[in-house]
Length: 117
Image 1: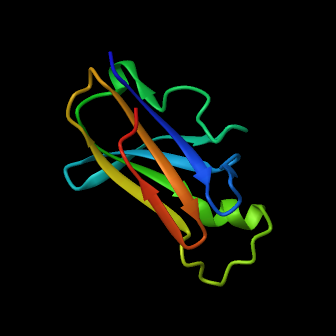
Image 2: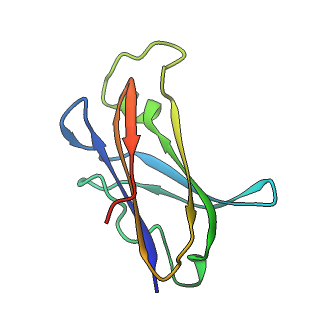
């Protein structure tokens, strides 16, 4: 069985994105279903798989990384509104037997993601 993992790297501080809140959604038929909310650990990772087992099926998903709250919590003086507040990463799971890893590299003014391993 496959599974989904994620982690956050804070490129502004050169550290893991510890304590960032992430919401997980499944997208279907024009609507979104909230599956869970997690907070990254000291290594910037979820403590376990974000999705696994019967919950990990083919389809479209969305991770919402609450980067504005994270940087405010680190004492970064952000403009209002912040340039980046919630970073939404939408992606598809085509092969639920595989491991999908969706990392986020982020600063207050930029981000990147990719399918990791």
